[in-house]
Structure formats: C-alpha cells, structure tokens
Length: 110
Image (cartoon, rainbow, N blue to C red):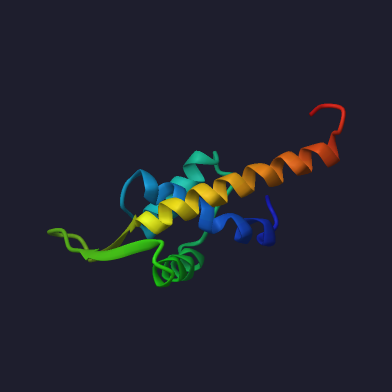
C-alpha cells in the first residue's frame, strides 16, 4: 500500500515506539505494527532484524535471549534511556514533517 521508501524511513520510529511499551521479539513487533495499522503497514521479519541490530549497535535498544519451555529461543528487545530520548526526538520530527506536508498539500485546511 505504501512505498518501500516511506516504510523504511519510519521503521525505526515504529520499532522504538513498540519496545517503549514493553520488551518484544521481532515477530511480535511486526505483528503489532500490522495490527495497529489495521493491515496498512506490513514489515517482513527479515527487514525488521537489520533495523533491530542497528538500533542495538547504536545503544537505543538492548536485546536479550529468552528461552521458554517448549518454545524456541527468542531475542527480546527493550528500549534504553538513550532510545527513549531518540524516540521523543523522532516523534517530534515526524510530527513536524506531517504538519509541513499538510500545509503544502492542503494550505486552507491547516
């Protein structure tokens, strides 16, 4: 539905927002994005893991392996203090971008 470029540009913000709620594993993050967007945003798990890895390398999320009886091992990601600051900055930037786009697209409405 949306261009890959638009989705790629918003993936970090979406991931940070979801792990800010609670620790999540990659499949759960993808599932939550799809559910909350009412099916309009779908990210393959294979595209989420490189993003999670980059966020972890930058110190914005922390991953830990969890093993549950009868289930395979999963890596859960939680947001760090730096990640919360980055999330707030990205949310602000995103809102400013949406506002600017609204002014251009429909100047009489805003």
